[in-house]
Image (cartoon, rainbow, N blue to C red; front, side, top):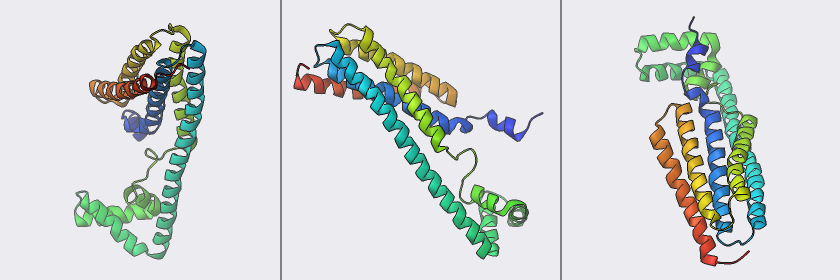
Length: 233
């Protein structure tokens, strides 16, 4: 039996919040930590220096990503709650005007004036605030983000992504390590882009090209900085 919950599960929009946080965190972890490692590797002569800088980058980046995501999503949630509270007050003070607004929304979406008025009236009788929050403000259970969930997802994803360059720093030869870091990072970015695109139901080629191009630019500029200073650390 097909239900609305099963129907929504078959679509990708329900994954957008956590998928965005995970892809952003992993992508940032791979690129930023690899770029940092490459910049240090081009100027360093010891493995210990590269490992120290890479480890510090993973820890600092994961905490920063989690904190930033939490603050960002919390701010969004605060705005949504403030709008919902304002809408509840407007429904209490101006119920007839709010009914007209809801009717106009449905009419603009293609319903006849009479049908729009009837739909607005029935939804108002069922759940006035819910109807306005969903159709006037555009807030629903799918698009609403959870600050804790987003923060944990971003922090964990950054850590997972950042551990990949750290593994290279631990195992690859110190001489020309920047090339090993670049090659391994590109492979990781390709896998991340393909996985995120498949999970989100979008174009794999477009996702891979986008993530590889920007990753290459970031790592290239970081390597240039190391070569530019040419300081042995």
